[in-house]
Image 1 (cartoon, rainbow, N blue to C red):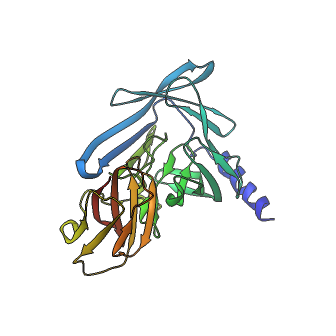
Image 2 (image 1 turned 90 degrees about the vertical axis):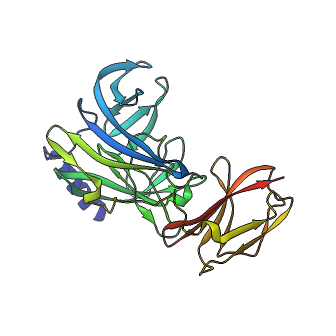
Image 3 (image 1 turned 180 degrees about the vertical axis):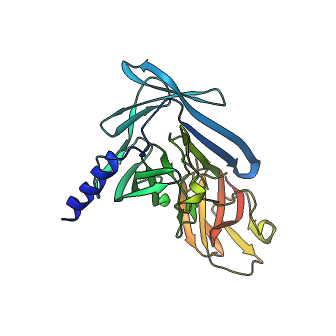
Length: 291
């Protein structure tokens, strides 16, 4: 009965004219980016500019203001995208039901629930609530997929990380990677209608990745590290989640709180980053060199 009622609601939403249409020429997504320690990384607008044929597929050509092109096509509520202009990957599928999973190349996500909501000027928009399953992005947990718009970030209370808003996947990393690429969907436009995520689904803000609050209060000795190192601090707290990331941005160790000794015996030689998240903020981050 539950799935039957859900199907009726989705059929009703599909029949409404105000629903966002996939890949209409003229559609625009505006994104702004901030890159960790570097700071502001600028803004970008992705626009559907017309029809083309890529890899034998009639599809839409999409142009970014930074000079790049992307391609996408839709078949029966399934959207396939190409970032390289040669191969396509299915990323969105609104025929999926609760519990189904989709491998989108960089990661796999599972649909947890489906709802029909109003997003700004758009009514009857289908939204999938989903979470990432499996390595390496499992820390992202819950996020949203809005039909016609794409991924929309949400905060994850346990990991204090967020999933960024974007239509394609290369900017999904957000604070998961070391230097924290935060990509915020500023607005989505189609004809005279507009949706600003800050108005709904608690998508405003994000985690500041470039201003650790207690950088000078934590010491790592010795550094470079041969096997183990001592972590000493004068912080007014000792809780949080401490994570050791390798240079690729993949977590290799994690501790609850602030241990006195860190064992890096089994870590390969190279550059690592030690990051402490607490209360939704990056409060400490520093480089660690393994000899």
